[in-house]
Length: 592
Image (cartoon, rainbow, N blue to C red):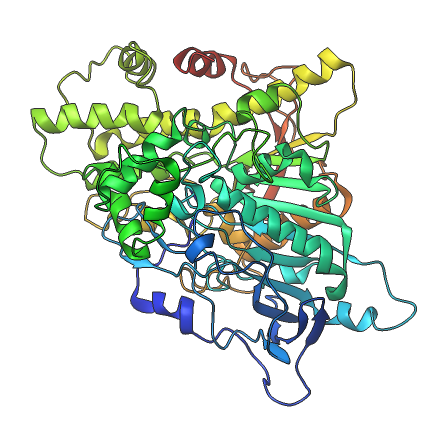
């Protein structure tokens, strides 16, 4: 998944850089009081020039350190300060991580990281201070992606400036990553899902406090990208969240994706982790002793050791993720596999908007571009790692199936994957990790609706097919002569460029440029859904009536595409994303 990518030394700004504008001293600063105390924030300007309020680094849990490492999050106490400094002068660090999507990146962040940011329009604050206040704005809670091991809620990556041109409150949250967020022993010594429980605690914080910011706790939308999008679907499957949100948006991420599938024996992974950090007798000690020992390990050592799971591979292996807990566990989050829960219709009945971009899979195929010399050993290693990444090692026919579908009659025996194969590999990962789980999720939702004869909340689909001036492919791919000028299409994370301002990554759009107009229209679509629970499906172009992949019982997707004529540069049309052949192939591959 999606993550903040920082290829420049300005990364340090994530922790220390100023991100506010306006006066910080005196009375001319935004202030809010909640149950935990009062806070002062900062003024900022939206892309359209509207002034809005920003509150940075608000704690929603006690620091998950010491005995709270590998433990369920605990709500924070009232802060000791008379007034919390939420101005952003001292940015909170991200959760401890090493971004393996980008080889060579170092360790960053802190274990003490459970803080959130809140943004609201200034004029909304003024309206709520009188008796004739306008209706409260909807709230969008954003969950970042990053494969469950990386990601940021920093305003330098997930800036609110584009969304603040619309009537909405934005909350961006953090959650523990990697081993800190997802290590499990399979019992209550370390039940797992701590990152997902952090998200849940943040949602409880929003429900309890959003009125103080002018929001309505009955009008909350959770929105996430990639692993954050999968997290949204998982939060839907946690029935204890009833009442905490009323809409859901999953951007290029599904809980039914192979990379989000719970491990059968999470305790085995926990013991491997302990061995990697030098804990003696890790294989024989009790789970309680194991967790106690892991709590004493230096946090940076825990993070750096995770890279050993990749065996030196360029592939971004997703090691940790959701875990199935027994219902008897304290405050259990996931009591069955996501596949089982979703197929049974065991999820909250809220409107759900979900979709993909054409080349989401590039985030997994791009590391192939970093391969150098080819040898027999490299070839064998690549095929083994490919099956590990796809999680297809259980299928003895996996390689044969993949070669037949993606390489056709052209044999690839004995040939290494190189940048010549990147398009084929992108298609492979795109189907397996994004298109297949999305289509499968929708199909099961529809099937359960028919079987139970119940009226389920609607699912809306989109396909973001607009290509602008900037792309995350410049970070995913190498910068050598063979790839620097290559067009990889619309890749994973590219839709985020039009939702959030990311000044550390991309320059701002020129006012009234095609990209600026596309951003304004796309963010309005998302905010309108957050407000109404309905996606505006008015199209400007005709459907593809002759599309052979169409399926009359499967909903069409609203496609956002480059429009060559007229005043609007972002066009809308209905398209069909159901592909029966693709669905059947991957169901056979994964023995679903």
